[in-house]
Every structure is written in structure tokens, then in C-alpha cells.
Amino acid sequence: MAAEVLAAAGRRVSVFEAMPTFGRKFLLAGKSGLNITHSEDYGRFRTRFGASNGRLAAALDGFTPADIRAWAEGLGTQTFVGSSGRVFPTVMKASPLLRAWLKRLAEMGVTLLPRHRLLSLTPGGGLFETPDGEREIRADAMLLALGGASWPRLGSDAAWVAGLRHQGIAIADFRPANCGFDVNWSDAFRSRFAGEPVKAVRLTSEAGVTQGEFVISRHGVEGSLIYGHAAALRDRLDRDGVAALQLDLAPGRSLERVAAALERLPARTSLSNRLRRAAGLEGVKAALVRECAPAIAEADPAEQAAAIKALPVPLLRPRPIEEAISSAGGIAWAGIDAGYMLTARPGTFVAGEMIDWEAPTGGYLLTACLATGRAAARGIDRWLDEGSGVR
Image (cartoon, rainbow, N blue to C red; front, side):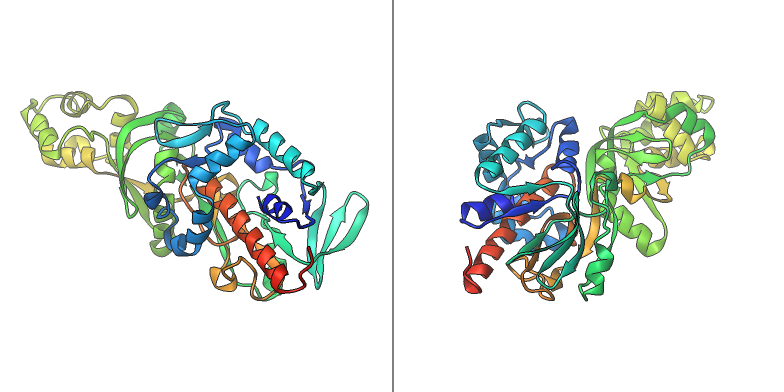
């Protein structure tokens, strides 16, 4: 995105990519359809970035979800709004968009250099490992878009952190975001229900209350409903060492209705029948109640109803950052000016996930990455005009 903006402004631009091909994480994001942005009201969209809402606002205003859809259409990719409000390419793939994009950049005169890995920053540029050996490359300005720490096999391995810290740049440690969590399942529950979806539940955490579904994994819990609460649950674990999901397994029935239904059942009714007849719980939902409230069979109807409507699922830890969809942490906003330049290193700019911000899934992550790339490019263009004036 930055290369496209700068080339359009008449700058001579080279893009250095450590991997053999471009856009590997972009392609992974498109494996299930490329959720490129979200169609919700833009005023609400701008609030999805937590503590970074203020710092990201100008970048997002400069490249809104509507702008992204128009940009994709300009590259021959039509988009549509899914039932959840998420926006996808009609072809449900990332590769046609990426191919068209790289072709456009080449036609604009952008030099694309794969297999060029940044080893260290130098006073006028950077030292790169290239197919022809190490080479120092100097530039009037440099943009770093080195990624966070999730999915390191695709290139974002956070290897850059030590070098920038050595130059006095403040960087918050990376942590998993939009991730699953480990739960200490019993062997019997794990062997029977790993991979099973838990549908139509309401989840409560410090992030609020949302309804949807998640998946029981061999290690714990995964899925979009969990990811929406991951930051709050992770921070709670970091702060207190304990955290729990609170699940309403029968969101269509009130607590009073469930309690009354349980009260009407004969005392001799088995727990399986009580859960099914009073709350409609069978299969994995009924097993979850047994797993997380082991004394429920001996509980009175009011206590049983409370467990069904607010079942705590204790969490051990987030899944490893290598498995996370995205990461929290990175370069502190305090060291980045309004044009996305590092204040400790004039002429060096940053964008994307290497900055300390996070967002839920749903198109927000990709939108902000693209928007910060464009914002950094505009910052570079202004800085060059104010400085050397080189074009």
C-alpha cells in the first residue's frame, strides 16, 4: 500500500521482501475467503481498536472500508457483504487480487525484490541479506512493515525487535491476540468432543456479552466467539493468573424459566433428562455442564439453572503466539509521530502489525494494516518534501 501511494506521488520505490514470494500472510488470510474489511457503520468501525482508537483514527479516515472496496474493484476484484457484515471478494480468494496488485506496482515502476532480508539498520538505510550476499542499501526514507509475531513461518517472526530496542526504540512484548485458550479437559471429555462445535451460546467476559459458537479443541477452546473476547481474557490471566469464560448454554430461555422447568421434574429424573427437558441441552452442551460443574447432579434446581445459564469454564493460558491469528504488542505509539516516523530515527517509518495495536477479527486487522501503510506513505512524502525535496 505504501509503495502504491509513493509511486503515484512520483517517488522511486523499492520493496524488499524477506520471503521468496510476496503477501504470504495476505494469502493465508484469503484461505477461507479473505475477509478484507467490514460493512458496519463506520462510526462503530472506528471504535474497534481499543486503546489505539485515537492514534489509528486519521489513518482509518484516510482509507475507510468503502475506500478498500473501491480499491479492490479497481484491481478487478468485486466484493460482497456476508451475512455477518464481513466483506469478502466475490471469488472468495486472495490470489487474484494479489496478482493484479503486484502487476500494477510493477507497471508503476516499483522495484519488487524478494529474498531480501533486513539484517540491521545502518545510518543511511539497511544491511540486507540478498541472493548475491550481504548488501547495504541506502535510501532517502525507509518504511519498516515487518509484522508482528503470529504465524512466523510466513515471515512475521519478530526477529527485528532486538535490533530496534538496541537503538532505543520502546517496544512492548508481543502477546497472542485473537487466539484460543488451554483448558484442563478430562481425558474422557477431550477424546469424545475435541473438534465438536458448541453452537448458539452466549459468552460473557470483561469484553461484554456476545452470542455465537466456538469449538472444543484438544487443548481447550477455539473459534470466532472466543477470539472476540481473547484480549480481555488474556489480560485478565496476565493480571490475576486466573480467568474463566462464562457461558449461557440456553440463551433463548430465561434463568427463571429454566429453574421452573427443573423444579417441575420428578426428583428421580436423570441429569441427562433434566438438562434435555428443562433447557434443551444434549451432546457437547450437556457434557460441558458435567465437565465444568461436576457436582451439578446433586445440586438443587436453582443451582442447576444457574450453572446452565452462567457456566464458568476455567482457562489455563492463551495458546502459543505462533498459532494466534494476530499479535498484541510492538513499537510504542509514544515513539511514533503523526506521520508514522520513528522519533528516535528520522527518515525511518513504520506501519502494520509491528506497531502496538490490536483488533478483533472481522476485517478490522487487514483494514488497519492497509490504512497505516497508506498513512506512512503520506508521511514519507511530506517528510521528503520538507527535507531534501528529492523525488
